[in-house]
Length: 329
Ligand SMILES: [Zn+2]
Image (cartoon, rainbow, N blue to C red):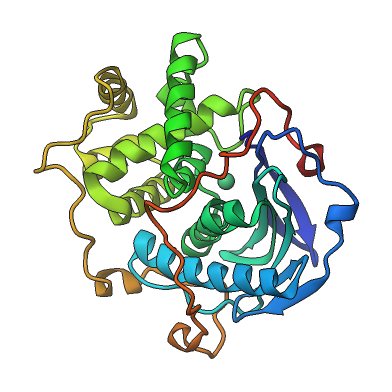
């Protein structure tokens, strides 16, 4: 439930690189124990190397990760990611009552992204239904944009692939934040490249604004809008071009009015349209240093993973009022 992240600058091989990491942790009162950190089995897929307590779990998680990587990349960008040159290690701690959460880190250097690592934890159901799609959406954005996104736009979008129960919880928290002086003015939020000390309102507002925009233009337009904002550093201009809103300040006004009205669905004429043809997007979608194996030849999981309404909340078993797991701080 608590979401923490950080971005630090570092050096690798003498070149200046940017290490990007994002964490999603769930308040549960359960801490990672030394015992649960012992992994018994591994499984390798085209793009992932999974460590999990059993081989069956490692296989399930790896297959689901491949399927999410494919389907979510198409949902967001219109085409699947090329195979990564090196697989992303996933370390999974799986236990029925383990608080669900995840952490993904990677390195940006000269327009490339590499050195993936992902740790996930929770019950099998929560991991497969929600932690994986959230974390894998981070890798899709990193592969697509090749640079850090504004925090609200990244985490907000990742939250939209979570289960409806969790999204409803974010909305309830948003209303609390807006009525207790913890809301963030949009000009400030749009300028945030690091996480604020009071991080939860950023997640709630980011999710709410991402939802508003996606409900009106779909995921492809959202990605297009973010790309424009990153390229121009003119978010008002990007909003005007893609959503007809004249400025960031005006966006805040429009969004707040929508929240006050109870977040009504958009008129049919404004509802998210059918995504544009994949061909229109293929030129802008790039994977992590793709190797010679076309994405179409990458193994695809055969076990179906439901990627929409059937996702189960990763927070269903979370206890209220606990503290974030110290292990992921
Ligand atoms: Zn996240």
